[in-house]
Amino acid sequence: MNYFNKLSQASLFMAFALLNGAFPSLAGTIVGGVEVLDPSELVDGKTQAEWGDQWWQWASSIPKPQNPLAFDDTTDPLGQDGSNEKAQIEQPDSVFFLGGIFGGTQNPITRTITVPANKYIFFPLINSTADNTSATDNPNNPNFFGNLPVDSNDSRDPVFPDDCFNNPNTPNDFASLRNCTASIIDLTTELFASINGVDAESQIDLFQYRQKSPVPFSYTVPVNNIFGYPDPLFLNNPDNFQELSLPATISPVISDGYWLMLAPFSPGEYTINFGGEGDVAGLQNTTYIITVAPVGEPTSPLSLLALGTLGVTLTLNRKLKK
Image (cartoon, rainbow, N blue to C red; front, side):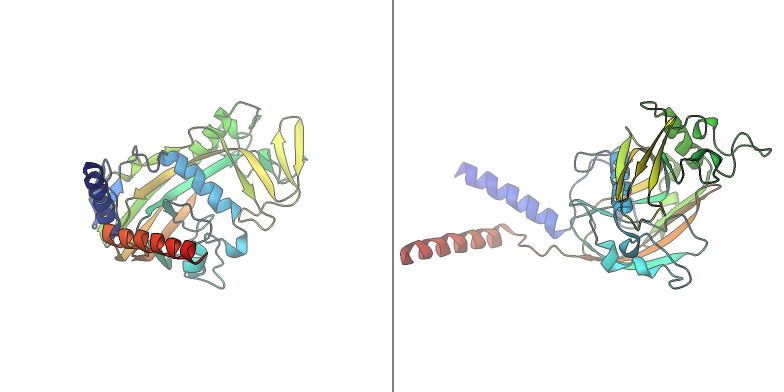
């Protein structure tokens, strides 16, 4: 009897959380009726930096025609082609990823999607990665990694640190990749976010929400990928160029950027606007109009008990018939 009471109390608590579309969190700030988690808070046992790496794995793996981050301003000037059907592809269990436009755009975009009530929502304001890919194995080719438009050999002031170009991918030395992507994010000039018309900047300092890869990771890109990687693709290790046929797994990769993690929403309608601008990363300005759908499964101890009783009854009836 004691055990049953404790079980009932636990079920009631979980049912209450599910009905409200949210779970209790350790820390956060309420913005527009939604909780923005502290950047140090774990979600499903992962740091937000780790979720950032998983976001890149998600975004890179979806072919361009189905990818919610793809954008063609000649056919889709509002960016709505990344809307509901595409937004649902390959989402993880506990978190729902949002994104802007890969490579940035000068035009604000708007998307309308549906999100389950039991999911955290995670998105970058502005972000970048560095890896060891090169479109060619010929150092004299303009597409070679070290021949990017601005480097320390140009007459202009360098935009990236030398680590981006001098042996950028020495095996087991990832400081160069880390410095390279950091140099892009360091040039961020603006960050912004609003939830239901309330500016997040009035409540929190968005520049405190930076997340960097704790360790190098990998992602797999398909043939028609969002990065525009050619087939074959070369891994640019010094004196050891490796040719890869697509689809291919790229490693090592380092991510850096500014991210927000939102606690699960109660069912209803929400509007989120977010983005940022950097001298190298470009401009992101994305609005999501979100319908949060109630969880469709039974959410009370009585309904769960009823289903359990029904299952037992059906099982007994089958046995009796046999």
